[in-house]
Length: 401
Image (cartoon, rainbow, N blue to C red; front, top):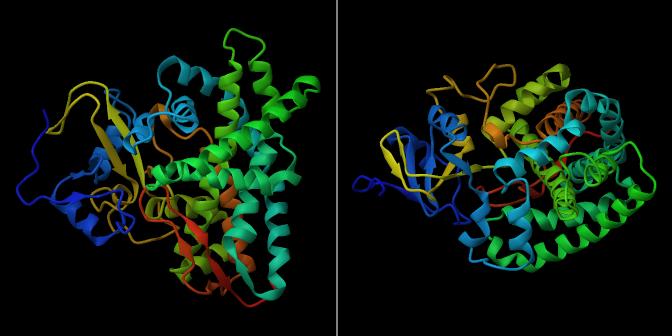
């Protein structure tokens, strides 16, 4: 049994490409009550309730049923999606996370920072003399893709093809996923075939990289990966690590350019890079909602949710909730409560420190090299629901920095 919404209550269509989860309509609903009914269950709008839900063990990660919710009941994508780390629960989820964790430890990522800086400078050097850039194609995508190649131990010369597959796999998170299955499945096949060759190479000639570590984990030890688990894990890491960082960089630059004083401040004080990443993800996250599914009948602050009921945490709405963030205007110097852009609880994003670190390098460098940057047209953007970001974002600035 579920709680009936009040007469005249709002109901959001999260699958409508014109619906904006950052809109005044959402803010108004947040002032009325902490949740709202949606086309996919309910959405949590306030910070405290969102934080509690994401850690509530009466709920599990709610993504496993995403294909079925969009009419996809069989096929390559359907089967692959249910085996990704996003969809797994229990001991399988914990085991695979444990095996991957060493590659994502703080010390390992910090050692890569000089390389991140060198890469960002190289990319900016290519367009700085002309005073214009299509930020996604010329910076965000190659930066994110080349970093994930380095992290996994892939040939960096192949970054463009890896990025193409990752971009197509990114349609998995689209509110239009039902129409994207052929594109997604072609990318799964292409990236799996490519990574199979990499696995074969590392099996014959081990190196000090993540692929070699996971190959070893499939061959020895008490917590072995099956070959299928290895394939799924590598494909998921390759696309998730690239796609979300690329999208978030575009959203970050747009947000900062809308606040020119903050852009100038970031150029002057690059140590604010990490804080800028957190502030951008609070107000303009690429992951616009985080999903949970009730594993039993739950009474949640008076809302009765049946087993199997789906609840979304709207990241922007929670992050800008004035109850938790008084004076929530964009400010990269402010200390805020943790945002929900990387989820929370046992499903907190495994690669969060990589994303935080590479963006903390890139954003101050872009601000320093393009101090008077402004958008050169509106760009093209994905719907502001599901996973969002720029398809293209042209920027102009005075050349020479």
